Image (cartoon, rainbow, N blue to C red):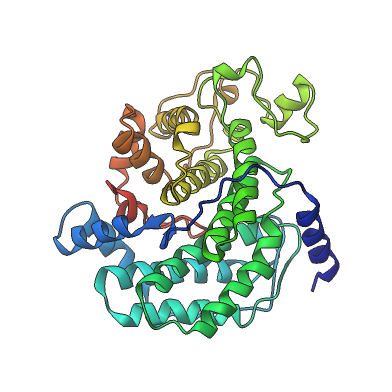
Length: 385
């Protein structure tokens, strides 16, 4: 185990000055990515056979993650190097966390206790076993897994009576001691890392009702989002995260993968590839969705950035040829099933016109899973309240 780094992380957490308070006076449960109203609409629409919810539910239930015969594969130490090489438990952990979330959704729609029991089996197995993450991808691996665990736990804890208090307590300890120290202090890596880390930290904070962790996650997210998505109002160059060490034009351009022309909605990883850009945009949406459920709607703060980013990437994902000034005239597509949450919030709730995002979102329904931390978002957010 990495005892010294863990202790150091905890000490750093205690020493960093607290940001201005953002946490709610009273937390709302379930309240990580999904609230009771959204869950109720999801269940009602599926049972009524309404689309796109019914086809999205059928897609989910046909996936291996929804199999009642699938078994958890917990490990005491999960070792993940760059691009999960080595992969000692990385895939197992991420997919077991997503399976727990999948089972929680299946439970809520069907009210079949077998699915709730299966979700608990995954959560209990890992909370009884895991102690640490190691190697270079430990923070990102922790973030991806810990984005899914609280979603599942919130639904089960607050809608199903069969999870023992001992199981809840042990799961809470796992989140606090194994995952939170890995993600709460953020990262100086590419933006998708830190945005995923803050999504995980926020979900953990809600489940644990940890106001300090909640405030830290919000403060870091507010710094990172403007440094990940560019708006022309930022000036000639994109913003940087305070303390990032990006001080000159050449350093910033290098960090933006060689891009020298900046337009509304361009993301820090656009010219790397759309896959990693999609991870970041998804985490931005998930984070804002959870704060909205907790009574602190951060969508208005980032609405212009997110709608332009979703629109720009949807346009080229749909096949429009990129101009020569964008990534040298060549983009690596593969945005993934990440548009539903942001599109629903910005178009359906806030009324922003998002034609490219709407076309891509509707064309690719039902949205499935990237088997990392995104799953079943047509089912959960395709027109959710």
